[in-house]
Image 1 (cartoon, rainbow, N blue to C red):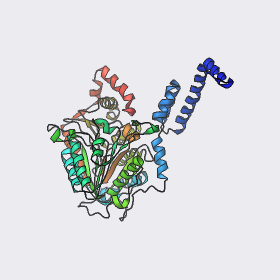
Image 2: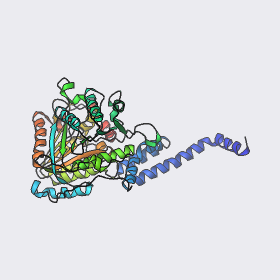
Image 3: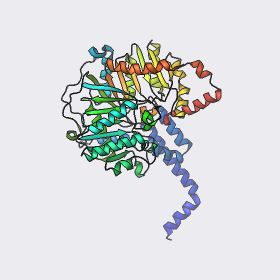
Image 4: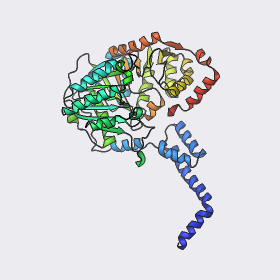
Length: 488
């Protein structure tokens, strides 16, 4: 052992506690400064700085793993890459004025959408509401069976159960016909069943990838960021999107005639290009493969009438962060008569809560439908702790009866609809990659309103008195869990 090595050994042996203290102070101060300088939400900044200060060693490690938005950075870098092709070519002009279709108050919402989404509002689309798995799954499987060129499928959950195997069988047959197929599943969602289904897909020769599997060089899912998008695109011409995962529990065939509920949508027309673009972006982000417009998008569209204007709204912890948040704020502000909301996980932040409460105080009827039976107990407890904040402003809250309903539906004044994968909770609004569509069509809004109103007729109204009548231990439990709602 040379003199320098010996000196270092003695230094560490005699002063290790001081070295650790100094190191922890330097690392903790660096992490706290980074959090203060990069977090736009003051609550998030305060929370992370507090965690780091209270735990100078563990806090920076937690911040390094869960606090730094590397996904947003990577997406931002990719958006500057000239080799990345975003499929936004259209032969048709965008919709210039929605006033005649849905009313002048929606003109400002149209402008907001233009500034929030890189996609333009397009007419010439046909949209069909698919109420429940018994409508959605057969239509999706039939479309897969009819595919001639390409199939793109993205889902948060794709269970390895009887329904999932039906989809794998249909995809395998399409693959054998020579159809190009890409399947993208979230790395967390794929673990809802065992063994996970991507192994079966790969054995069938189907190209499949898992979203967010390799952060920081470690083979582990980055659980706090998830792809919650649900997309199926056939030949670049017909698409399905909405809130529905692929699970046997949403089909009467595999749930003893008592399926959980959800709502999905079939879209035909130029807006399908926007869905292809969203999928292609996520696929390249995950695998590095760039999908070509010529192969994955249809050359023309001739969907059945009626035609409606719609567009996709992407949101997530990247350059599209807060897109849905902005759209909902704008929608609640332009409402003149009625706001209907159906969400399985209703945990809006204070900004959206304020927008809803302001609408109610303006005299707008606000109806919020949530499940009477929720599949996530902790989320349900947190919801119960927060409902009094909308009830006191005059909003009406309804607990649905019957099976759990996973639908995410919003309508404004029977004219504008916002549907898709986003829940009204912190995870969907800040952490998940989500995909929704806004539809300017009175007929579509009426169909969605009818679905919500039919459940409200059988639902139970909840009041502030009902919440106050709960035993103290339950109210305390709910409030404690509510504190952790951003992480549920």
